[in-house]
Length: 588
Image: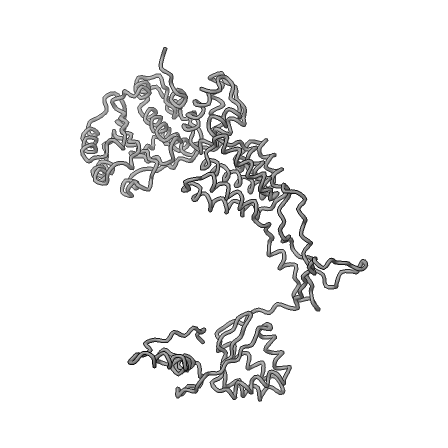
């Protein structure tokens, strides 16, 4: 019985047209071959299984093919050179494993051999796979040959970690970045192979294998080989999920419906079922993240605007996703995705990943519904005359059974009305029922901009324009604005008499108080008095002098030293002193 040849080797592309998912690379190389503009060195970069080594062999075959037509870049696969490359016995095409030939001696041997002309081919071609594994010294030994190679020499490097290739090597090569193969392309390639093998399959089963391969066509064929060993002549979704240990998309749909409905019991039941069926929790989380991403795309992008491949799912699954997202919003789906991304690392590191996964699903199920604050802000008309009242939120829903939605306060945007709602008759409330909460927004005042000195000067200018403002203005000259915020304003005076006069002015002159309230948006006024006058001669009592301490800070330090408690403590410890005093106070 002949040895079995796996699908990835049996159906390895023999021509450029057989390569899947790398059209940009194939088109460039084909044009270069036809035009004769062939570089002396190439660097193929990309993840595993996307065709780097395969394209390198195809390029080597095409360059040395003696039966190829001038206008056709594809090798004939019939001449002696093509057959030798296919069999791996060509003397002029050497394929070297970079992981096994990392030393300077290996590179020196290549440098010596490359000097001699090819035996029976137009070019002598060196293919080095996983070239990033070569040592730095070996790379340096290759530089001179790579920069000025013989006319008959061609180098083709392949790597999965291009960042490890030195810039000196990178700059001497034509670089080609191989993309991950899309799910539709992987499905198409597998479908053609299965037709040649005489095996039936469903699109959903192939889509599941293609998604699991994560852009690697070689991985997809390896998984397909595994599934064929179990399935035989017919590939079905149920057996694919069983042999690969995957959760079907219907499980994701049911789980997300439970989470969106805030049905934590149903969500935990599904996770528990997956646990008993032997699914991998880490794989489940990664698949769930991808499924949530697809849900967001389905919710945000209209059906007519979606391009092919935007949603990584079969048409039947997309219809199912559209049904899942009906009862939710994009913001809520993004919140679920963010929660799951934050928990992904903890699930992988946890000694009991299933418990960590259950807690992550519970957090999602109990997450509050989100409301777009912009909608609420837009609903408040701050320029309309009169007060605008926000109606109370609707009463909490009572839970009928343990399987129903858990109670939570509705976060829907409040209903705006300029007049109280019309009365429909007497309303009788039980004593236990709380009265609805109502509040009134009369206006929204922006916080003054600028420094405290600038704001204080602007405020004094407004007071000066009042007919009765001059006496108040003279009192304000003795004070300064220490700090201000949306809730509190601090004004400081270095003498208590000025503070009292200012307070009396606010109490006796409603117009002055109205200006302060209008200027600071009804923030609470806090009027402070400096505990003792200092000898600093400055027009602004709270300005920073040259020694870095403000007048207020000096006064507070002096007050702390003279405090009876401080003096009593110093008296208990003979010869003791205070080295430093930390002032917990906003700096003016």
